[in-house]
Image 1 (spheres, helix red, strand yellow):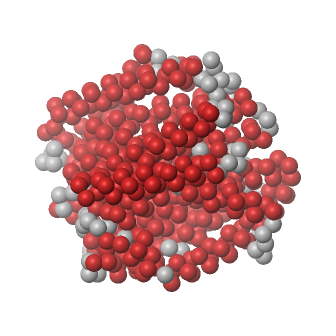
Image 2 (cartoon, one colour):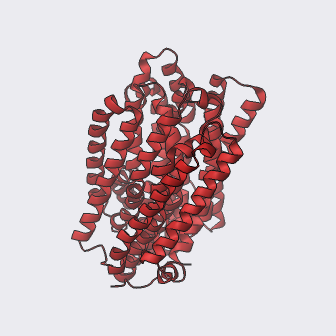
Image 3 (cartoon, one colour):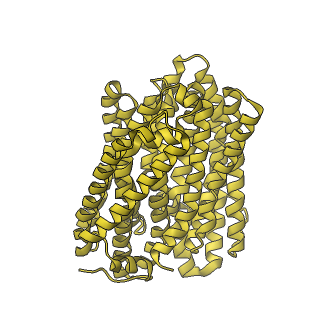
Length: 526
């Protein structure tokens, strides 16, 4: 199976999850808007959800997958099973102890870490603490599920791990539908959603557990023991978690800063949901597939194949994300108006703020995706320290920029800080890969990048003028069907213009498509 076909296998499951996530956020925006319960739920969910993204979207895999792949290569399935059981015993015991400690300390965690700005708002702080207490055990489920997903990815069985997250959105959409049917008030909706998050964690764990058993590995519980392999995993896991989840860590910091302003937390969350669609479909798929493939190539000594994998991944990510970034920058307000502007969200007049945040996130999108394409080049070589240092620098840049801009710009200032930090991190990762000789020189790729940027810019200019020409059809007074069809037509027209321009300028060619889709591997060109 070719690299892009593997990307597509993961991306299809992720696309289903993110599309359902749109449905969930549309219903949630209508039910809660950007009011106090929406702020409380989003802040409470941000805490366990940060851990979910740290583990489920690559950080745990960054430490686990290379070691698991090595066990398969050297000791076969039996050795991989033994290693998995050793890790499972330690991981489950540590997670159980951590969850108990966090549940007991939740009021302090919310007050000083998650949402310090809520402490001065009567009822908001207490609601956030209760919702976070209900949802935090989700961490156990998702961390164990991440381990199972890493095993499946190493065995080149990608779909079950990719499809499992969709059940979070399926369950929460069902909860919101029930709440609408029963006419529940905002507080009841918030608590129902929190219990739904916990139920979703159990369902997702069950899905990947069954998939691992069907793959021929049955994991039993072993008494926790610090074996050499487990020690090596832990040494790699902490910096990998910090590095792989840097975007989420920056978002958690942004949430804490935003809690000082009413509606800022939920505004950031709604914008985040929209840009997570291209980030998840492309970036997460690349990170999940590239790491085990790169690990296998390096373990077998195939440096040419490793260089090719990295180059093709960057080629694919830029080809797909540059137009998405341009579209988010130009069309943020029509997108937000279509997706969210109804019910309590419309009553709060939240569209301009959320649209401004989304446009800025769009500028950071290529950086966020490139980070996921660059970090496997370090993790596959079992170097998690260097990316961790860059992640720490990125966090410092994010905090300094957010604290500087938030008093002047509000929530959009936090989005600017996140985008700047993302680009700083991506450029540092690339520079050191090049300096170490771990980045294969690919002349055609270097020629294509400015042409892809030009193609995206041409598309953005065309969309800008088309959006103003169709302003009445996209405006708040236009019927939903008219807004939807107009926006879809603009997206389709923009996509056609981008691809035509990309092929016409040489930013893409049919050889590139054949190389990415039709082959398992090919040497770098140039």
